[in-house]
Image 1: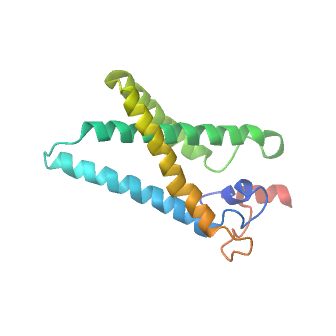
Image 2: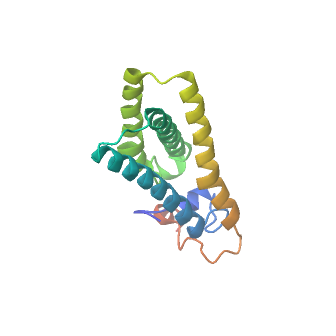
Length: 164
């Protein structure tokens, strides 16, 4: 769906509409952006108004964002290595990983070394990460997957050049 495209094609292993299609892709991205935006704006508003912030919630939410960033980074870099012989190192989301997910992970890693979250914080953050993946990725994909979906990707994006 994004610039150069091809995520749906490579994710679906050569299929343009199953299991992921543009509807499930949009839903997972929209849910992720909305959730992160609402939480961020809420905490920014509380801070701006001078109201206290629940530091335990912030720490555990930060752990969740850190783990998601690490997992996304790992998956995209692994994807680049897996398809190196066929398509080169590029893969959809690699730029997002390099310029967004990895810097976020480094930022939180440095922050955690200073703030020292407890084992309980890490456990709850890890559980939150699993819930986020379930609610924002696995469930929408399961609900909207349809081999006859009219919402298939129009082409293979970046990978189209290798198919012609």
